[in-house]
View (cartoon, rainbow, N blue to C red):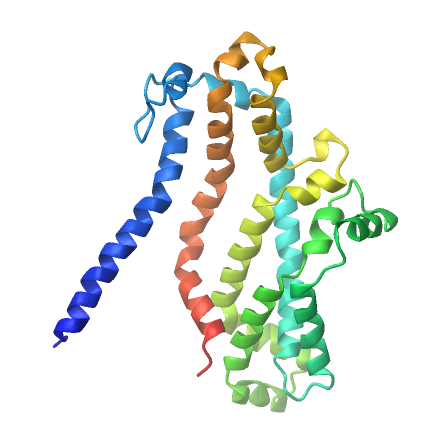
Length: 287
């Protein structure tokens, strides 16, 4: 039977978590309501959680823009390619670091940790990417951000928690290092891999600064830069002199683009969520 103190803790914990959910959910519901509301109600500050003056003009204008779909396609391509590369590199690096018998292991861990706290700076990074010929290519977005040190350390801790007897038995059966990784370790690591896929995919999907910095062509930009330019344009003097229909829907443009940009992540997350907590906990607690 639970103690009185534990029951009080559960009640307080439930109330606090419900409050956190409400605070987190309110801005998104407000954005959805704004995207479906008439311009006049938004300017008057009458839109909260329920759309007022139901209007799809902004959706029609945004979705009729060919550049929006071009940038949207770019985001999908960049996210898929970058996530695949990041998962492969992070898995290989983490698996190597999980072996205590590896010579130079401390140095490799130190190199990774160093980059977590220090970087070359914006200008040296720009010069490096440009000198390598990666400007205006997908690799300018993918390669510099291929490994997250936080994800690397979580995955390393997960691999260290796996029983060493399994790998020893596989080695006795004749498997080499690559065979052990592919046939023994990875099938047991679905939870952590799914978690890392989610982390990397969300990070690359939301990323905009690298593309803004390294891409000069509009048709190469991701949809996040499209959104950034839309927000900047809606608040500029040029926006006031734009097409009448676009001016009428200017206040909802940002909301519409945010909703359309967020939908794919919301669609994917439920399928990955069941691995999320288990993957992070297994990678964070060794026992």
